Structures are given as structure tokens and as C-alpha cells.
Image (cartoon, rainbow, N blue to C red; front, side, top):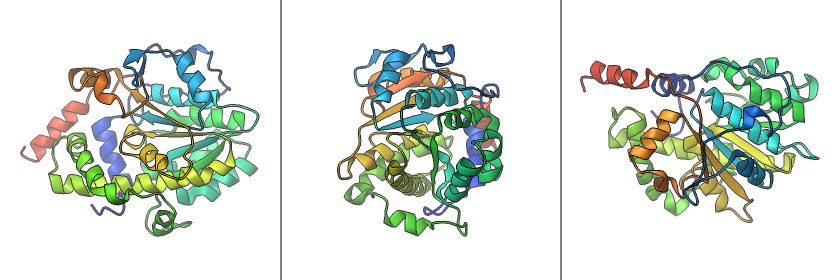
Length: 318
């Protein structure tokens, strides 16, 4: 794999196999309130203190923060619901911005057309951006978030790097205006390598993990640049994407924090219940201090994930 670009459908197919699409498909049709039962998440940890918190406290802090990062396990309905509630917490006198990892930057004209001319119809957005071809889990899982965005008139921006040959801004153009890791590049790559190996079922070596880390870092730079540029569209922003992109110590928040006059930021990581058990059996809550600000535990991972890793190891003779 070249460090300059993900082969998106292939990469996302692998992610769907390894990380799973969990839970049932939910379809949202009405604007929600953070006081609704759907937003009453019971397992909330403030990672800055290591102590239990509450959904009300989280949403209150989110409402007063300029950029919120919500990190999901891809395809988990409960994590989409968390993002939907965080977006509802941003509703104010001016519409907020919803920034999506799931949509490449070169789809911005389609997103703007959808907002201006198609009454925020959530059923049309997937067709406008070619969701299925991008390789993400079933769009119906994400439709409640898009529905909420339409209800409050949010500006949706695509953040991910475009595929080679796609229309719109080229990858090189996006990188020119994006914040960079600079002298910290080697240290950040080294920090990513163990995680990259683990997330690929321990089936790749350090060299391959380094290439994937560089790809991830390039994508994070582009997405950070898109978030900075998109702030002019609304007073506050919710970024929604995979947890690896929302790390304070390595990812998009790290890059934005090192720009001139950075905005206030809050990183919220959603974990499935089994992911959280793995955290507790490993580094524990204290191991996430400085990685995210909050952890919200909700939903279940696909139970076949580990079996798939074992099958892949057998196929590769490991």
C-alpha cells in the first residue's frame, strides 16, 4: 500500500471484516433532544480524572466547545446515536458544522447542492456522495445523524482525502494548506506502529505498519485542514469518524492544537462494551488519559471479529 492513499473500498472492506458492523439498523426521522431517552448514555467516563461522569455533563461541556471530536467503532448504531446527540447539543441560533470522515473532500459541491436544493433529504445524501462505492457500512446506520443534521440545518463537510483522479481539490492541493507533523513525524509514526500491527490482526510487520501509519497521518493532516477551513461555515463543529482520528496525542486534535489560535476542543471516544473490557484488561482507564477526554461505553462489537482474525491467520499460515 502506498503511504499517499488508501485503496478505499479494499481498506474499508478489510475494516468491516476485522472490526465488524454491529447492532441493528436504526432509522431516525425526527429531531432529538439531549434530554431524550436516546441520549441517556449510562456509562460515561471523564478520562481527564479517570472518574465516572454523566451524559448531561458531557453534553453540557460539548455545547460550550468549538470543535467536538466523536470517535466511533465503524458501523455501531449506538455510536452514531452518540454523535447525533452531540450534534443536537450544538444546536443554537446559527447552524453548526458536521464534518464527516466518511465523505471525501471532493464531494463538497454535492453536499452543498444537497443542502441548498434538496431540503436536507437524508435518503438522497448517500446517492449524492456515492456512499456505497466508498465502502462504508450500511448508510441506514448513519441516517439518524444525517436526519438530525437536516433538522437543525447543519452544514455538512466532507473531510477525507479524495481518490486519485476524482474531481474537486487534489490530494496535493489539500496537503499544501493542511497542518503538518513536521519535526514530530518520526515520533508519531513510531507511536502508531504497535497499534497498526494490532489492528491488522498482528499479520503485518513493522515496515507495513509504518506505511499504514504514514497514510493515516496524511489523511489526518488533510482532515485537520478541512476542519480549519470549514469553521467559517458555522460557529461550532462536530467531527465524526473512527476513534483513531480523534486522538489528542496523535491525530487531528493534535494537529489543530498546534496551529495559531487553536479553538477549544473536546475528544469523545465511543467504545463497545467488549472493547472497553479489553481496555480494562490492558492499560486501564489511566492508559487513555491524554488520548481522549471522555469515553462513552455503548453497544456490542460483531462477535465474529476474533474468528475472522483467526481465519485470516490460518490462511496466511500464522
